[in-house]
Image (tube, rainbow, N blue to C red):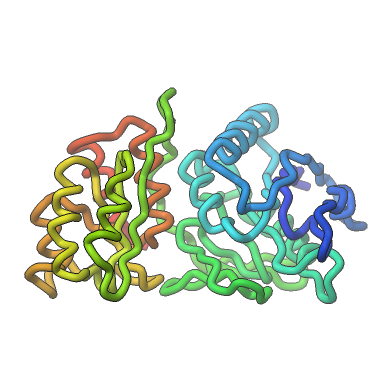
Length: 322
C-alpha cells in the first residue's frame, strides 16, 4: 500500500464552531487508515497563509519525497484561499510528486461535517494518481479538480469547489477513484531567486470606475500588474491610457473578472479594449482567472524572468490546450 503523509496547515477541518481552539490533528485519524502519517505543519486559517508558508510546504514535500519516493501527500488546509495556494504549490513542485489538497466547508462539530469524508476521499485519490501524477489536485465533495482550474464559487455550501468552463477531472465513489480526464502539462516548476518577493497588484475593474481609483492602485511600488477587465477585457476609455502607461514600466496582464473565459484580442477594437492595449505592451492573460494570473506573474518575476523571456513564458501559459 502506498504510504500517504498528511501535511496539515489547519483550517475549518480542524475547527469548532464559535471557538478559536483547534481540534487535535489526531482526531482526523479514522479506523482503516493504513499507512497514513499525520504531520502538523501549521495551525492557521487559510486567510492567514502567505507565500512563505507555501514555499516552506513545497520544500518540505520535496525533501520528504527525496527520502521516500514511494510516498504520496495530502495537504489539509482552510478553503478560503485553497484555489490559490494549491495553484502556487503546483508552480513550485515537480509534477512527478503526487499531491492532493483538501479541507472542509463545515467545522468538525457541525451536523454533516464534511472534513472526514473529504480527507478519506483525498487519500483514495492520491493513491490512485500516484502512478501517473497530474500536478496538484484538489479533492472536495468527492470531486477531483486541477489546481490550475479550480475555484471556490460558494462561500459556505459543501459543493463550493468547481472548475468553471472545464469541470472536474474525476471523482471518488465508495472508496474508488475514477479519473476521467487529465490536465494539460503546465509549464514549470519554477525555482525562485534569493530576492524579496515581487509586488504584483490586482486591479479589478468595475462599472464606471474612475481614473482616480486606478491611479491609487498604480501609485503603489508595483513590479507587475494583473487587470481584471470587464467582460471580454474591456474598460472605460478613460482608464485605457493609465493601463497603457503602466505597461511601459512593468509587465501588465489582462484577464476577465467574469470567472471563466478569455479576453477578446481582436473582436473589439478602439479605446477601452484589450486589442488596443495589446498593441501597447499589455499581455493577454489567457484562461487563468486574475487571482491565479497574479500568482503566476509573481512567481515568474521571482524566478528571474523579465523582458522577452517573461513574455514568452506567459505566452506558453496562454496558448496551452487544456
